[in-house]
Image (cartoon, rainbow, N blue to C red; front, side, top):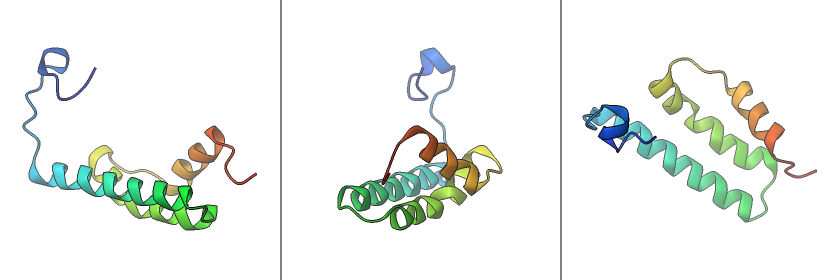
Length: 81
């Protein structure tokens, strides 16, 4: 199910400019974090980039805790160990 497919979600994609900006900021931050990870930077460096996008995720989903997200990332990937 995707938001861009109105037949599956019942929505027509009438997102606000703020929502689109938040998605752009999230995508940009994730791309930067992935680039840092690929270049071999320490966990602290690329996770700081992820922390920077958490407010934008919070805009879309409501309140979230940064430690919760970071813990989920590390629980699914064995990075730097």
